[in-house]
Amino acid sequence: MGRVTRIALALALVAGTAAAQPAAPRATPPGPGDDGTHHREGEYGGVSPDGRPSPDAKRVVPPAATLGWIGYRPGDAGAELFLMAAQPFSVEQRLEDGQVVLTLVGVRKLGRNLRRPLDTRFFDGPLARVAAKVVKARRARRGQPAVAGGVEIRVGFKPGAPIAVGTVRAATEKDGLFYLYLGFAGASPAAANP
Image (cartoon, rainbow, N blue to C red; front, side):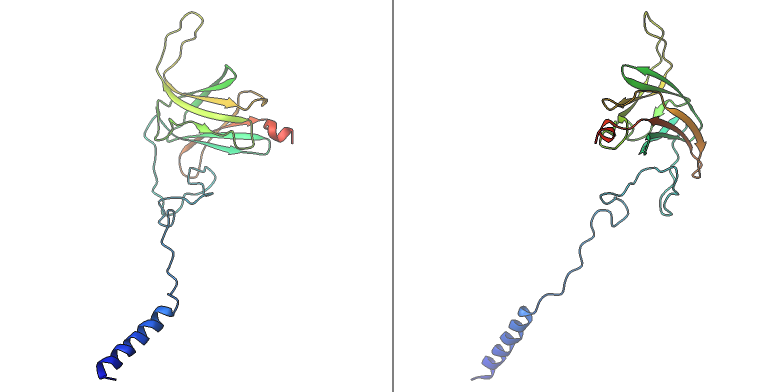
């Protein structure tokens, strides 16, 4: 055998044994949520009035007269809806067509993403849907009361759930923002009839 043939055989032998060895395991590529911009399934990335914001989170204060967030927390004896804004505001409640209609006094605009309704029917609790919209002021007409302009929130209930106005409490929390809490009592029909 010639020298060139022996070198070729040696290279083929080295290449063959290298190819037969298992490759080192690759690190899994980072997925959404690993960079801090997204949340993995099951992680809540919204506002929590109880908790402190993460240290790397930017503090975002809603502009004046703007509703910054609508939150929902199911509870053992009902559900709690919380509304967040930079300045204090108040709420007027009324029953209309099987819904509770909240008129926010001191709030005229909605923050980002609040025009989408909140679908709460899959949680244990009496609420099914929460929808917010900006309404224009209207004069009173026959059979229709006058409406002040601002933000209106309609709270829909699950079938069989007790429909009643919520109990209201307000507080300025640790983050310096104003929160208005509305508690709605009553178990959902599914929880009442197992």
